[in-house]
Image 1: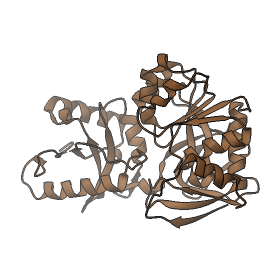
Image 2: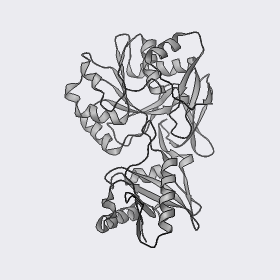
Image 3: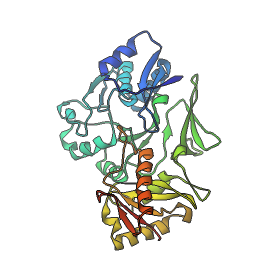
Image 4: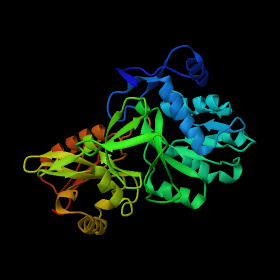
Length: 361
């Protein structure tokens, strides 16, 4: 069971704080959501639920009193909190470092690490420096989606890396999938039951605990595994047809170099226009634009095809590194409004850093 309250500030929290909170007499543990879908929340989690989650992960990875757990994830968020709690519950060894994109603290570890928690941006450094690091038996990656190039690099590294699925309300991950095997579904941990609501969104249940209803559109497979399609609150409705931006991004990932994302802008005729945002301005060159349009035409049905191309210096993200879709939409909306007031095929903003162009125009 969990209760939720809004939070406007982000107090400093240490792993020692989490240890004290875990061992005190309160039946609750407070955790802060990432804010990827709105205002960050402080969520009060039942310690019984948290313990159930910790024990399930320990069992999956064979964590014992002889194991070493290492966290590169901040204790402010559930991913970091759960690492020390897993260690406490297993009476295992625990170490950590201040989060950064270069987790150099691992260079000082002389023992094998049985479970390492990281976010995607840290995995790049780990792969580049693997020969200098201790043996990493198991790595869990969470916090944000793993880009396709990083997936491929992980697969090539032969590291035992698992992508996690879960959220603060479920006391961290409830499912895992090996990153070394591309395009495999998530497998729920023992004791987790899944169902879909009327929207097709995932509902997570554990025995004796309240169900957690997500806004994640999912597909349940007959073997008990599942796939995440996208978020219900990100669905774009264009011409009365639904478009899931996550699906568009997944299909385009092999066609576009550099960071990119799919958003939308309002349109009087269609209600919304699917919009492709890129950071590499090469896609505005005539021959690359033609290549892009050919790929879009080949991959998508008419209502799914992006109709606007916007070039940005950077794709906005949340503090946890997740794509910030509400901010991206606001940026696109402003650029599109300026574009509609111009008479040119391609418009730029006042700083000449953002570009916009019609596709299939």
